[in-house]
Image (tube, rainbow, N blue to C red; front, side, top):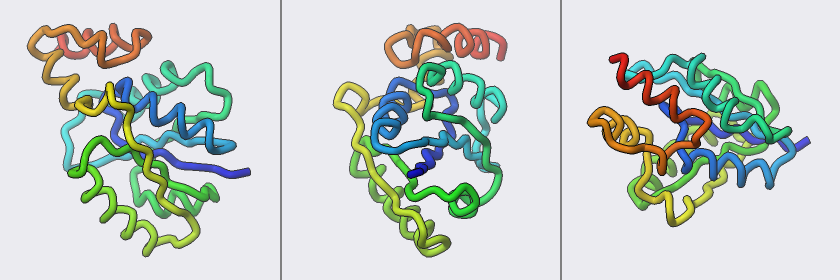
Length: 160
């Protein structure tokens, strides 16, 4: 079985994330969407809440599961026997950072390749940060996130 890990913060998951996860699910037998915990970020949702949001978005994709990682992605990838780390790229600036991370992960665990999927053109500007910023000013985020989690995000923003 060819397993891929698709790590990210997913705070919250967007149409861009959904697109990359779906496309990865077409390339691999199993995709583990991995909510990576980054102590340097101040997330809107807890890791468990992000897992629940991603599960809502991917509920119809049988070969997609969601998990949490509080350590090194390379260690997790090795532990689950994954052959690939899937990362989405929006722009050249994403590539510079992700290329560096790919080299680090390859150095830590040589058993998996990093696979870059370029974003669909309609999602090139989209990020979780944009979603949070627009929502915090009461803007319409329905074009940025799946309908099944729209209420969750709006409720959290209003509750802050």
